[in-house]
Every structure is written in C-alpha cells, then in structure tokens.
Length: 380
Image (cartoon, rainbow, N blue to C red):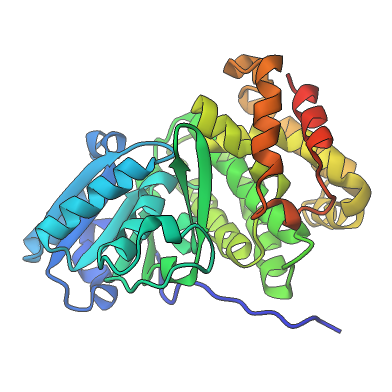
C-alpha cells in the first residue's frame, strides 16, 4: 500500500523556445497587473546579452524595470539584503529571476523579504517562511538547478557556510523555459549543470524519508531526458533539441527533488562551494562517485531500477560506471586536489557536512563524520 504523501509544484509552466523575447505577454497571467518589476540576474548573463530581448519586451509593454545584476555564485546574505533594499526603494510590485540557480534563488528569497514581514534569519530550515510576497516569475538560462520549479534557495551565510530555505512561498507563480537562452553554454558548464540535474533526480528517487510515486515518475523521466542529451549538448552547444531536453530534464528533476529532497551528495558538495567557491554542479559531480558507492549497500535495488530504465548494465554498478563515463568523456575535474583542496581541509569540510540536518536524514544510508571523511579522502 502506498504511504500518504503530498506533492506541490509551480502552478504554471511554459516550455517554448523564444518565449523570453515576449516576456510581458507570456508572463502576464502571473504578473497580475504589476507595473514595476525588479529584474534579478548576474553580470555574466547581462554581459552576454541573454536578457536583452526580455528587458526590451518588458519596457516596450510599458512596464517599469529595475535591474539588479550583482548576484554572484553561492549568493551571500549581503547580496540578498542589497537587492531587497533596491527593490523596496524602486517600489517593486513583482520579481523576475533570470539566470542560473544563484539569480533564481536570490529572486525567490528577495521576493519574500520585500514585505518586511519577517527577517531572513528566521527563514532558514524547512517551512519557516511566513511572509507574503509579490508575483514571482523565474526563467532559467542553464539546465541544472531546477530552481525555477523548487521551493528551495541556498544562501552562503557567514564566511563559508551554506544554509537552505525550503518553504512553499518560494514556489514561483510561473516558470518560463526558453531553450534558446541556453544555446552556446560552454562545454564544461553544460556538463556541471547537467550532472547536477541528474543528481537531483537520483537523490529524489532514493530519498528514504519522502520518496513518493509522483517524484519517482518525474525523476525517471528527468534521467531519461538528461542521459540522452547531456553529451550531445556538450559536443554541440547549438543543438536545439538536446538543449531543450536538458532544460526539460532539469525542470522535471527540480519538481522531483522539491518534493523528495536531496541527500548526501548535495550535503558533501556544499562545503566545496561555500569554502572553495567551486561551481555547484562541479561540486556535485566530484563527490557523486564515492557517495554512490557508499550508498550502494542500502540502495542497490533503487540504483538498479535507474540502470534498467536507462538501458545500462544491471545493478548499481551500471549507474556508477555510467556517471563516471560521462564525467570522463566531458573531461571535467574528478579529484579534490584538482580544485585546490588538500587533506588538511577534509576535517572542517566533514564537520560542515555532519551538521547538515536538512539533507543527511534523506540519504539511503546513514552518514557519520568518519564515513564522510573516508569519502572525501577517496577522491583527494
């Protein structure tokens, strides 16, 4: 008998190439008449011209737009607060997040802070957000985080630590997926973000606390799309079909893990980003192999289901070998030492992971400080 579960997601999703260029029209149902828009992105996206069409369309439709483009990877609290201040001064009536996971995460948190009803310090954890927010629309420019359809945002707190907010007010009113925004993304970022999305699906499918039939179906569908497209997208950044499949797969994985959350891989990846500023997707790719091997004794059947679904050799070995093959084929870093991380860094990284009480309870196998150290040392 299936155990009781709930499933929540973004109420409106548009998947259409070229749709960002007519953003005022496509987002109109979610904007709910708002005329003053806070547009959150980063300097890289802005400099590449990816947002030009969307911004021109908004302004041509008579909307007043304030652009905040100072988001950085693994956004710190200072960026959040600065964006909120600018949004309030502008009188923002809606928020649009445009970019990768960091701009979208920033947009979600800024939206719930604009009202001033609750401080950021009270929002960390699970379902701790009580504040209302204005309309929120998200557009991804990478195929990885799935942030456009999740209720999760990850913020860097203090000097190095990363903390998560998981609460339903962070679900956007609308997610707009325009594959044209991802054309030409370089080979390695395509690989990083694509593997991140695959990890989302794998961890959602094997979550020991919140696994459910809807997330399972989405996770398997995501893995099918992502596995079939990732190497094609890496080889040819202009392959529109592969880019569309990557974007769709990342979104499906986002819906899956938002309801059946991530686990040990993400917990071990966070210190790489928070302490050493390693891109989030690459962090996940590097720590994935030892965590898969560690979990195999408890998740053999589930990993085997994924292997069968993807047409790989049977059992967990099929999945582990295939993820290794993808990383090797693309040529991304595989060792901590390649990222400037040494044996001396392992204890404080492991302490950070061991304290992650949001993610570790989801892992198929219990992770202790000693087992975390051993997994890091395996990939030094």
